[in-house]
Length: 612
Image (tube, rainbow, N blue to C red):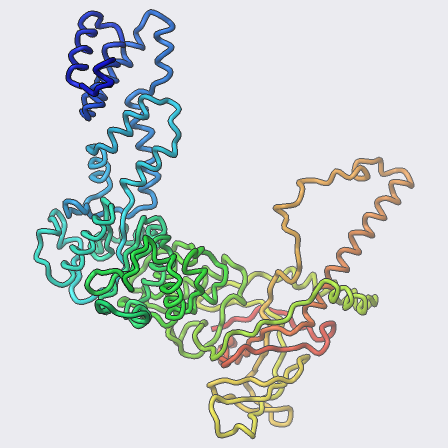
């Protein structure tokens, strides 16, 4: 014990061996030997000594001695505990990573084998063996620290190294030209930042393996989210550049860079010479107000979303707008790069063309969100594709925010509608709309449930006849007159000069207007005593009648609330019927805000339309 206090490990080992020789069946000598070996950092031998000690405890005749065994964990269990945490960590990591020390590309098995040779692993292994109640967080922290990787976000330029170019080769030893020099310097930066592993899209994915490519592209957003660091390399931003250079970088024009700056929690921007942008040496540029403000202006993405983005269907229209002006080398990547932003996984089908890829994406958005108004469905040519039913870059101004009604205003409007005929009509509308199916895609057409108003007159404004875009006065059944501005020249017609082509102004149906309860939050059954009573007594009959009246009253109220909401201004679509009977959206330069004249009698045409 005196030698232990002085860290005289060799002397302690001699003492331990003497104890073992005196009594080979005792755990004391092996415990002492383990302590000395651990102190001398001879971890493999320390593990072996601790393993033998556990065996002596298992075989001890004294129950008190055997009870000591409960404080320890077997080697196999310790390895299993670490392996489980490793598996969880690697589930959200790329399939292959570059070893920043050796420059070799490693698969997961090689990464795990490398970890098990490290001092960190052996120290963790011994800690688990000696502490049966070791908190799992300690294991997670150790594993995360070792397997945490740095990921590169960059713009492909010229010849980038592919997997076949670096497989079984140390990247540091390859000729430093073009993309290889970028790869080498990135790995060095990652190593300097304290990371064992690094990832680059060009060479860490087998582009020829369709299964791997599918998994990689669908997992890309999650990989960047869980990465310890994302390094953005701005190859066209010169050294010592000032604020504003990031916004002008070509990196800001690429499709894949959208998820690459939204997903990461920690990000650093580097200039052409691999110095930090604006010489900002903070550990995370997402905490820099100046850099995030510049990125917000350059991308149109709100600073809050830049810092803490959440994937999903919410604000789908806005998310599509972020990507609408971006370009990709491969056409289909326009859609594939957005999968992670919406939190969806779909088959990767290179060769299907951009139109089909975006169509599948939009179909999934509509199917999952159930809110067709989240998208701006227009038909004029866009950055995405002129044949798609969506263009989210055509607005000259942001969409109009429609006014909302307070509960007092709703109740006041309902009180003026409580006429038996009105209530019956309201119930009929409510049931009709409740039975409408959700919007869906089929045969490359959008099947859109909507409330329809037939256009009866289109006249171009004479005072603006020489200007474009064109402004038209439009009249439709049941709607107040309105003006529509569009880049398209419309056929002018009226009751006296009709046209064979049908034009409609429609309100896409939104089931949220029904104000249905969330059944997931409702109790499984009603415990009202009246439901359990004998139906034969007059009192019970009276109770049932009162309950039915309450239910009827609630239904009437729901129906009238719907009528009130349908009487409010709404965002309308202008549709033109095509030869095949389906419709095409006419793009307008601003949102079309329509107002019904009478929500009770002018909301009668409810149907599902096919839109190209």
